Figure 1 (cartoon, rainbow, N blue to C red):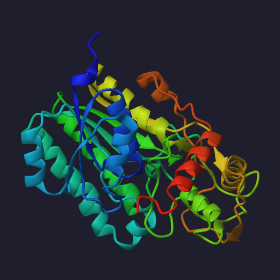
Figure 2 (tube, helix red, strand yellow):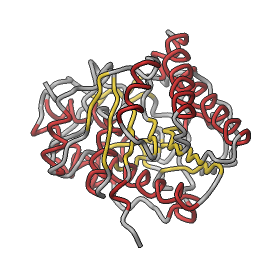
Figure 3 (tube, one colour):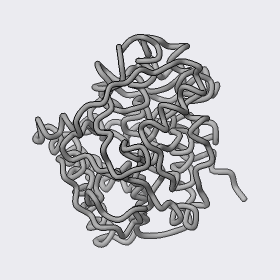
Figure 4 (spheres, rainbow, N blue to C red):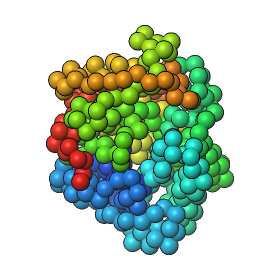
Length: 342
């Protein structure tokens, strides 16, 4: 069987948290990797870290996916085999405040990307979708056929892109598409060289916990302890970012051997509460994490976790890292990089 090392993978948003880990796993597998990112919520410093881990470099272009001319120049220079589309704005709260920017960046940017792909006859695509598209309060675990009803512009933008991609595949049988619905990525690469580096006060739980343990934030704010869960705090499906990245490597193989569209959850299939995650982190780091309970946030759901059995069946993939692994790796990243990539 011929190794897939000759393939060139184009990764949009390849310098952010998940995208950088995808690049590492692709390079490790022997792929050529071309990255486009506008660095809105990431750092160019990650590129040197990726090289340090893998011994190989990505080819990087600082550009926006809405810049058609720039994208076309990249497709002119490189023979792209597969696109991994991670680029996009990703804050739920920000999307509610500024929905037009999310539809412009995420939806319009994706349309430009797809048009350029079609022009250059590149018709294999992996899309970073989200569990945010599922209906709030739907029965758990969420399967790929669970009710869909996103409640914020971020989630809606992901759903709109999914629907556009399905329409494209219906119109042209040459397209092969994997829609990967992420649950809650946490952790970092085991080397400690790359990890999550949010701007300002983190929106996500794990980097918030890390910054409290480091002393960058005074305390963790826990939104709600009166949910119908064992300890009253919200339950989510936290997946190690390296497991998530490896799902994309498996999806490339799926695209080579299948047609049409695959929709698959990438999660652990297990729910972990906020306080359980804090406890696991405390054990892994040997650092206390002071917290203060706040009122529930509007739109938050008590329990959300995946049924990831379809990904195991179709991709031959399942999450193998534990919550302890993720906490240990996230803390190693934070200790080695107390100010992130700065």
